[in-house]
Image 1 (spheres, rainbow, N blue to C red):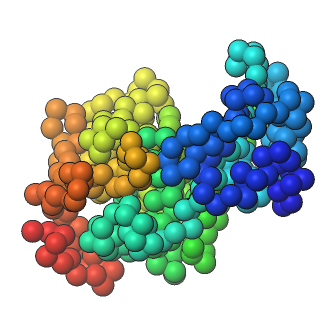
Image 2: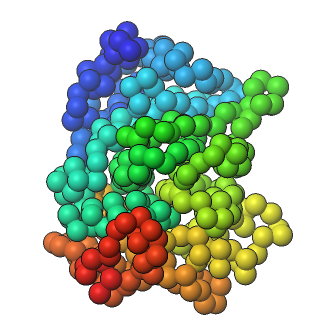
Length: 344
């Protein structure tokens, strides 16, 4: 892709490796993010330049943007993610976001070198993936959930077949046997929509060794839990404020699937389906870091799955919690021995 042709006046930001995200609030208010911090640029565009920029970017994705479809979420050829909202959803101007995912191809070891976690946690997570544990990555927007999920997925043993399921292609795990699927919006007649729930069901027919859902937002949480509770390993991300909040939210989202779904069904399902929750956070200094790693014990009480803290960032270093993980059989089956730091 020719950046100058596609992005025109913002091509310099797209080619700058220090720029993580670009967003246009109006033709006169264009921001970028570096190291997790936003900056107002001195770039000024016209309304036509903004719309032409979006039109050129969308030509590659095949997705549309019009009054009947005022939102669009699309992947660009370089792997960046484009999101656009137009009036009358916005008050006056087109709102454009381009997220670049600079660290997406980094491994767990490389993320540890960048301070996202320590070596101990990196090794623990690598072993956990190889042993087939089910891992939920939680965090806020721009905290690094997708980057961490991609690094975790890349630890999958090379003989396994992985199916990734996303709203827009963002994951690119470094493994040989992988199939990527993304959702599709409805056409002008309101037909042809393919949501995440449909993709999860289709993935189960594709002989997966494990499935990875880029982000769980709504009722697809139920389909993911049922898949993970049937012996199929998997991973996914979720917006949440902490590991504990992530589990609470994972128990709430399936209720959107219908009135016949109850907390009494979901609590034991979550307790048995999820093994680890890893929470990532973007701090005030622009640093992205794993702030908590918790294990789901398999027990539940008062319709709440129980978790135990394994590691927690105290502002300077990681405190080792009292939690353990009862997955010795799966580690042993994968030829991995639990070390002293994993189960005290």
